[in-house]
Length: 444
Ligand SMILES: Cc1ncc(COP(=O)(O)O)c(C=O)c1O
Image (cartoon, rainbow, N blue to C red; front, side, top):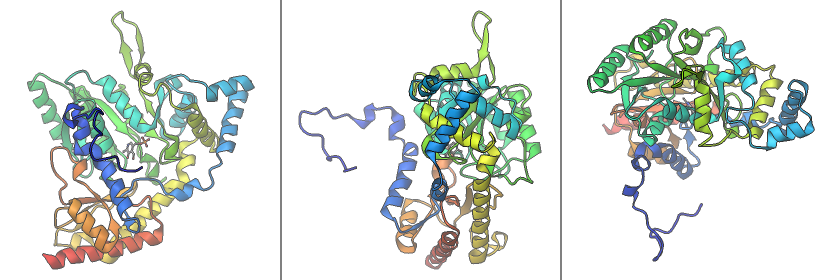
């Protein structure tokens, strides 16, 4: 798209940025754009920046066959005739979704989450589900606790919705529950309440952290005592090795404290923009009637995107059905590839930079067992200027971590993603990164 003129033409309304909602002037909301711009500017650089899926998985996707598979299902299982099938796919549809039964069944089967179709809302990506839940669950002034560092989609959405956020530091294997407790007490002393905690227990973006079983239980225990809802983002849970499964928080949740979020962006295709939320909480209205929270999320959704594209849902539904209705089966080949890429990335770091435990120069990195990301510590601030120098002189890109931290932190950290690169690029990228780090060292 051509850049607009620098000045609005005479006689045409000019809007002051200061009069727009303050969130749009917040650099946090621009952090995704910033990375896209950097990637466009250095097209030949090897990029450890994007958390996007490997595009070779798109090559064999036969959209027509998947749509046919779902149409057959509508006929055979739901008894629709051709007109009914056309209506389901081409007409406006229910805000709560079209493939809720398939998603609920997959969650029951693969993740032992006891979801019923009526507990599920199918959303425009996980991102919309997060926005809807933040909006519906937080009254004016209610505070969201966020594990820091965290996915900017959550903190950015909170900013967009004027929801105040408090940070709970990630200790590497989970949130600091002492800080969670003290932040809840601090907010309460000020007359407010922390309503919910956002956490990604399985290979979080950007930290790669995974919570062990006892931390999951302790977290749920704290949520109970502090009367918090837990917003569980499971975007990368599918990458866990088959021999190392851990229950989701939702599977461990006996009191309906956990709202569970997922996406088909990483196990299927991000372009379909299909995600989901399991919101089985009981909501009581003034006359004592009860309904599921999913109903309220769908009501909010009807004012945002009306319904998730039925064609996109049908595509995902067809993909699920073709893989036996199983999320795990749908994601298996991808999970294997991403785990292999992560292993190659860690091996390349060790080959070119040695054992992180032996380094004494401020360089270090985490070694997660799943997800798309690891984080690396540098001996100098990892700011935009450093990223441009690394890209222009060494041909390698990464993501500065600072934007992922709430209230400061991460100034010397970068995120490396393994999802978008071919194995040979991973080794070459790390070789270049090592040269860049040696150059930093030589300049100091
Ligand atoms: C942790 C996390 N949650 C949610 C999302 C958004 O997923 P979707 O593309 O389904 O909106 C992402 C996207 O990268 C993510 O990293």
